[in-house]
Every structure is written in C-alpha cells, then in structure tokens.
Image (cartoon, rainbow, N blue to C red; front, top):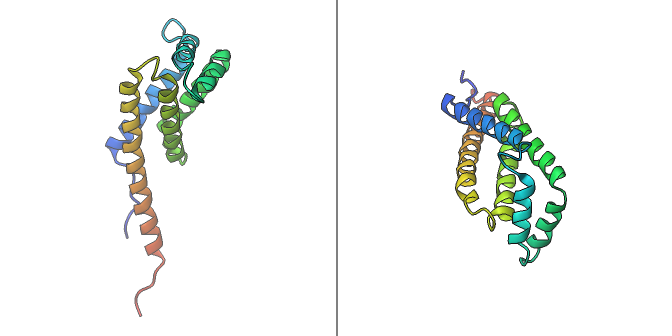
Length: 153
C-alpha cells in the first residue's frame, strides 16, 4: 500500500519562509517611516500619469492610500498565514500571490524599477511552490484513483 505523497521538508521550509516574509511585509505597510504606501502611490501616479489605462488606475489608487494599505496588508498577512499553516488553500494563495506580484509590478515599475528584482524572487518562489504542490496533488490523485481498481480476475 502506497502512502499519499506529501510536500517535502525543503519545500515546506521555503513555503513557511515566504509566509513569514509576507506577514512581515504586510505589517510593515502600516509603518510609513519604513515604507510609505501613500508616497509609493503618489510616485506611481506621477510616473504613470501619461500611460493609457494604468495612469487613471494609479491616480485612483493614490486617492485612497489608507484603503490600499489595508487591502494590500490584509492580503499579504492572510497569504502568509495560509502558507505557514499549510492547509488546503495553499495553491489558491500562491495563485493570489502571482496576481498580486504582477499587479505591484505593473503599477510600481515606472516609479520603483527595483521592484522587479524583489518581486522576481517572490514570483520564482511562488512558481516553485506551485510546481511542488501540483506534483504532490497529481501524485496523490493518481494513488487515490488507482486504489479502487480491481485488476485481478
């Protein structure tokens, strides 16, 4: 009898490190002396002002820095908690991370080009974790599907 495959210890450590980093980053959003979301949004609005679609969107975001801070912080902290706890929502949280990272880059790259480096590292980690979880999920569904077959006649 085969056991259901599990996420390896190394993958689980990476997942939890990323989770802790997301929680820290989410909490730090509320400390403008460390990272001023309002200033970042103002800079992004200025940098994206003449760009179709994204310019209007970043102008709108800059009008609501407190709301953006709460939304982004809540998303990051929730995402981090899911990764640390390693429950059934991990894959959904990883897809959410990818969408969030792409959104950050689209909005901020003109005003903060170094975001590409930092977010690329988080993007790579999310892809690595997704691949590992998908492999584990595929292997466990293969084991489950094969368990009920009676091939002896």
